[in-house]
Length: 291
Length: 113
Image 1 (cartoon, rainbow over the protein chains, first blue to last red):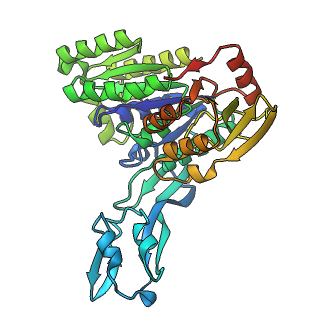
Image 2 (cartoon, each protein chain N blue to C red):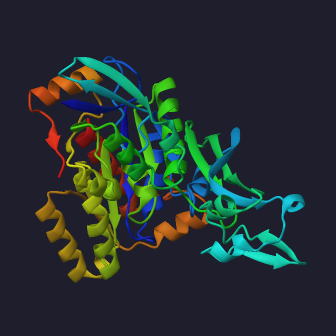
């Protein structure tokens, strides 16, 4: 079983459009894992049925037990996140500001502040339109993604893939270069970098590739909308050559992506187009490389 | 010399865990006493963030000399381990612990720097 992780560093490069297309092309052979939980949108294209749902806890939150509070104000004094408000002469934790560091509960003279596990949303296993399954999550308002949640989604996807004898896991990776990305990349068989020819596209590609390189992972790159800025596209290609990154595809700017999206389908399910052919060929190329 | 492996189980035949920070277990093999024991790492896997540095601290406390793992630690954990003078070998994510140890002895693993 091989795990293909798709990341971009920068947002808006077309990562999820490409990932969803691969999921459709792979069909029943593929378990999909959506680790881009901050702005999850794979579900829009995959028609999940949310068959299994469970609450997910990550991080902690301070809770002041009002009956034992002597209103000394020590908690408010030490909080560096300005998370304790005085409302009607009571000390109240503002859950959006609290980082769960535990300082207040440690110094509270009457030990009245608890650190409770924070429910950040739900995670799901769904049947999807490809005839396979997808593991995904939905965050509560103000909650953020974490390495822990990504690890959960990926581990469950792996379990499912083993149980159902699937050939591939396709992971829609997290944005940026931090903890969730580290967690997205761990255990990957192959990394697909989706980038675009903008200054920040190249900059973020280089940053996230540092991580890929450190993890000693094989990677290939898709330059999306390459024709919008030939100059930066050339620079990206030079970078790929220098780093020995597989050049998987160059996709021209194509309104068909938006048209397909408006219809709620991926490019590969939409009317025939050059982009559809290129993405199909790219998927076949990736399968060839990893096997 | 103490060799630590990131693993999914508690013995030589267990699969390696390619993860560092959120590995399920460590298996620690002391090649002088020929003793092997395991360390549960589930408390680190429960961290929302910063699992890597926490796991690195644990490895430091175990006084391991060598770490054998899959992909290698992320940036923050790598900094901690570097300070601790630990030697890190990667590329053993898909092996059993036994195979990983053999591969290490044969010099087939990558040095993480």
